[in-house]
Image 1 (tube, one colour):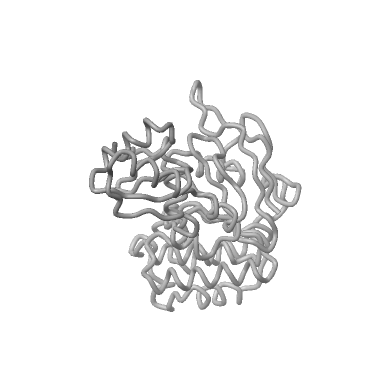
Image 2: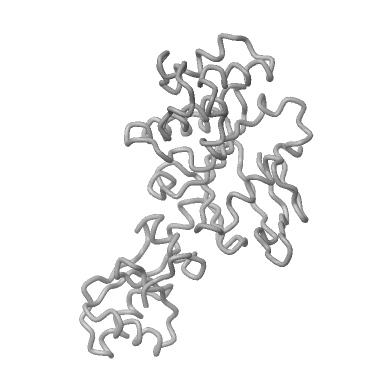
Length: 299
């Protein structure tokens, strides 16, 4: 199990991670979500011993990453697929990791086969790899030591649809066999398909966490009107908090009855009015992180 307790990281006056607490349970896939700059990567870097915490703890099965005698045998990590020696071949990178971990030589070929890197690709220098190939190599490296925990940051980035499906099946099977997966990704649909639990971070703080089912069942009402600005004004005047999304939809925690009554009183024709239950992870994510989106939302 991964356990993050009261984790804080500051850089001068800037707080990148602010009192973050969550767990990623054994046998489950935990999706770690947030806008750009929300603190996801900093949290993962602290968890994997690359960045020191200002306060709090981040442990795997009760131990810090830095205290593990042979971490690759217990925790598989992929934080940046491009952070590989560009002058070495994929096979060389895996062989170095295999020797460092004290694994049998056969493990290298097993991983190349698992991630579908051909013999020609394995012997090509990484500088000539596509992003998708680098992702596959990074995943092979993470899985090399047969770890029981995986910590992955954007592992599907650069993969084609078939590769994304392969990644999904790989991680789902890993968790179902008793592994722990902490997965950060901007591909919300993929997180929605695979994740059991969700942790959402914004401006360095946790804004929501729980099972996927529970979180997706609490996202309120989705509505649209031809006059979106008038609808927004009417909801505001009625004291109903709401968020206008770039796709033109308006989201609120109010019930559909409340929204319908407000629209009727304002003489507005609605083109959509429905419960957001099951509407999808993207809508929930935008609702929870509306105030922390770098791009902002339409008014």
